[in-house]
Structure formats: structure tokens, C-alpha cells
Length: 118
Image (tube, rainbow, N blue to C red; front, side, top):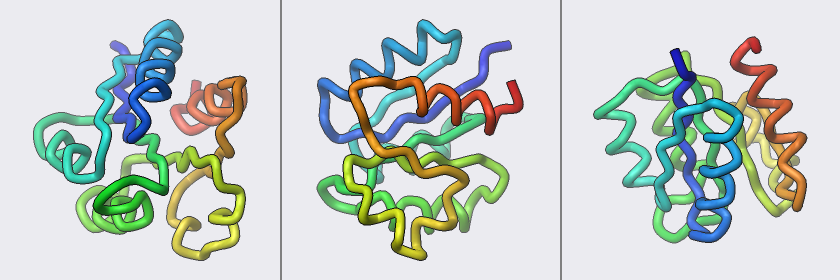
């Protein structure tokens, strides 16, 4: 059975790129562009992993992680951000991994495999 990933990324082109790349890796990807939509999806379906950006309109990724931790502590979370500086913010430590966005998705894919035990 395919592992299910919830992807939260507000930049549409990146959202599409990640969705395509991760689908090619054999994952079932549900992509949303904001925290509210992510929380709605969590209420509707089971996911094996969550990938979220930090800087988004409305609720940011840190707020989202805090809410997810209150609902489901069992789902691994990867923060995928262009901003290295957030790595020092203790609020991001609740996540299982922190990946700085780059043109290569190799690090992100490696982290996904590691957290899913593949």
C-alpha cells in the first residue's frame, strides 16, 4: 500500500513540483496551499507523513505543527522552508526533520524515506 503524504506549500509551482516528484517516488500525495486546508484534510483522511512550509498566508507552519501535535502526535512532520533561520527557533523542534528548500529534492526524499522507515 502506498504511503500517504500531506504536503502544505503555498507557492503553487513548488506545490506542483513536489507533488509530481513525490508521486513518481511512489507516494500518494495530497497537496494543499494553507494551514486551514491541511487541518481539514487531516480530519478527512489518514496520512503517514506531513511536509509543511513555514511562511504561508494566514496560519504559519509553526502554528500548524502546534495544532497537529495536539491532534496527532504519531504523524512525522518535516518542515521544508527556504529560511535556514527558523532552524534555530525552538518552536520548530517539534518537527521530526527540518529541510532547507533547494533545487534538488534529494535531501527531502532521503528524510521522507528515513522517517517512513523505508
